[in-house]
Amino acid sequence: DAGVTQSPTHLIKTRGQHVTLRCSPISGHKSVSWYQQVLGQGPQFIFQYYEKEERGRGNFPDRFSARQFPNYSSELNVNALLLGDSALYLCASSYRPQTNEKLFFGSGTQLSVL
Amino acid sequence: SQQGEEDPQALSIQEGENATMNCSYKTSINNLQWYRQNSGRGLVHLILIRSNEREKHSGRLRVTLDTSKKSSSLLITASRAADTASYFCSHLTGANNLFFGTGTRLTVIP
Image 1 (spheres, helix red, strand yellow):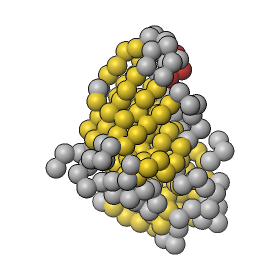
Image 2 (cartoon, chains in turn purple, cyan):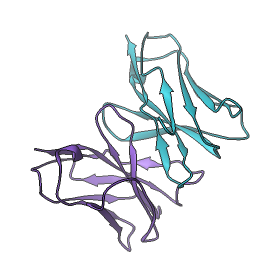
Image 3 (cartoon, each protein chain N blue to C red):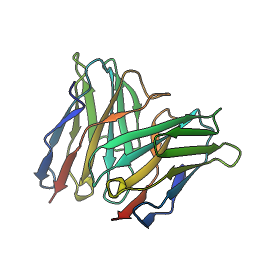
Image 4 (cartoon, rainbow over the protein chains, first blue to last red):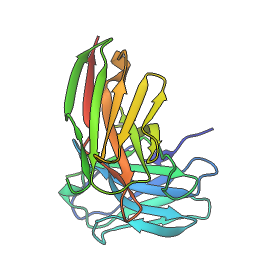
């Protein structure tokens, strides 16, 4: 069975541009979460989606948005990119929303904003 | 940190030695989880310990939880070079999302 897949693996953008990151969860998993990891720090929660509805949102500006599709895949969108948005963006899936379940992470998308 | 942190930030040991890393948190928890991350890739779940458990084992891993001190420790016994990674503890916040600390960077020298 395939694990959590993310695309693209690497991305270079310039300030002010827009970016879309994609995530496919493990088959049967209905919950997808997005995390931002700046170099040297732990992952920071951005969004959680379950059954296509937003279930949680971290402390990120409105430039960050996400959605989940009927097949449970998800997109993370970031508008008006800033240099500080450079980070590893991680997607994680689980069968249910985060409670007592472990998360399965993808390998991430490394975003560089120049 | 408002939510918790790992200690030490970095740890370097010889292959075959044991590695201990600690985690503190500040809220009540239902469970605490440990994850490993190799060189900026995705995180891999290692072990979950529930708030009513004090100790849990998985292979060479031993996790303890002290809810009175709001702390947990991860022990890796007989370390191997392949254990070189960053280790994070995580717990649910009041907003029902998973909080991760800054992690412990473990280097195992062959």
